[in-house]
Length: 90
Image 1 (tube, rainbow, N blue to C red):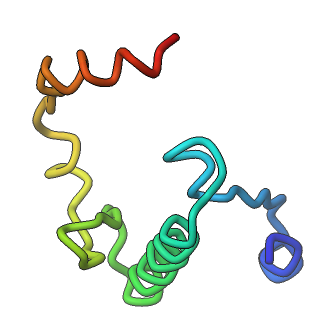
Image 2: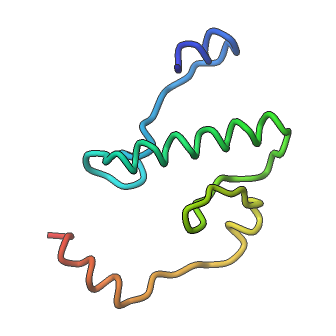
C-alpha cells in the first residue's frame, strides 16, 4: 500500500502497523481490525476535506474529533492504574 501511495503522490511513504505502535507486542485480531477501521475513517475525513480532525475510538464506534478538543486539556492517568501497570515495568 505504501508503494502505491508513493507512486500516486510522488511523496516518500512508509507503512506502520498501527497495532504495533499503539499497543506494543503482537497484534491481536482486534488490533488489526481497529487499525483498519481507523485508517478507513481517516481516509473518509480527507475525502470530505475535514482537516484538523483525528480519529478516535468512543465505545465501539470510530468517530472524528477536532484536534483542538483532543489536545486542549491535560488528561492524566489515575494513579491507581499506574500502580497496577507497574507490574509490567520490570
